[in-house]
Amino acid sequence: MSAQAAEARPLTPTVVAIGRIHFEGNIVPLSWFQHLKIAPARPGTQPLPDAVGILILADIIYWYRPAEIRHEDTGQVIGWKRKFKADKLQRSYSQWANLFGFTERQVMDAIHRLREAGVITTELRTLTVRDRRVNNVLFVEPVPEKVLEMTYRLPSYFEVGDPATLKSGDPYFEVANHYSEVTTNTETSTEINAETTESAGAKAPDPPPDTKPKKRKPRPRQTYSAPVEYARAILKALPNDLQRAAIDQAVKNTDGDMALWKKCVDAWRMAGYKPTNITGILDWYKQGGPPKFNGGTSGSQAGRSPSQPKRHTVPRPHDLPADFDPQKRGFITD
Image 1 (cartoon, rainbow, N blue to C red):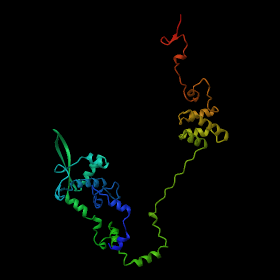
Image 2 (image 1 turned 120 degrees about the horizontal axis):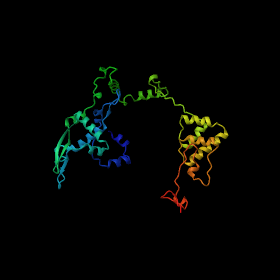
Image 3 (image 1 turned 180 degrees about the horizontal axis):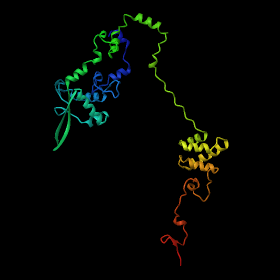
Image 4 (image 1 turned 135 degrees about the horizontal axis):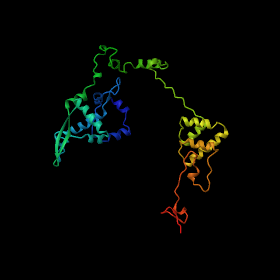
């Protein structure tokens, strides 16, 4: 990079602040996303990167990277050591699931895919921990040759060779032609600017008819009669087909009928009755309005519609006559 280019891009405060942060932990090379893939769920679709397997592999590689041993006085590196205790890294599916937020099933499938790809090897051992035998303890180990090849080898669609040897039906044909026709803009900058200026006012050609996205026709909004719409808005529930037919047959769309219907619906909602019981509202409407609340009748009984059964209440002790014996269920006689 020339000095002029460096001066033209000075550091911003955000770049300076990020540069002061010391990052540690797992390293994920971008080339892994080109090699570790999941089979497509549907035929004809592109395979997706194995994100779960990539994160687990990065964690495995972190633990197998050697740690420095520095001299306490001089600070010089005097050796290297491994980060784990045993000869191989011991991990469980639940540990990776808790670390990355995956399920144990996702971790098991990812470990299986990494093992099938030849990137890692697994071993199940039986250990003795505090005088207890623990079976099927998982130990994992990466394959350095496969990790090296996967990290620094380009995927197959970049190793296409001479574009002239490919046919137009080859899936790599478009990629090869695209990269073979790329030229530097230092030699042809004048021609490119001239062509861009001339074609700026031109209209882009329309895509073929079969490639245009088809617009979905909006579904027609179903409309209801005014009495049904009012009941739907007040009761927050849509009557079924039979109830809508009964409402349209009983309530005519006139000013007097609508006023009475609104009065019955409002009273039904204020009484707290079941909103889907349209039959009770229709009974009130046919009787000329909701029942009046009498002084000697409780609120729950006064608002009862004719279609609702009458509630039988048991008399309380202070409502019984003085000469009534509750144990004998009869009156006291001399």
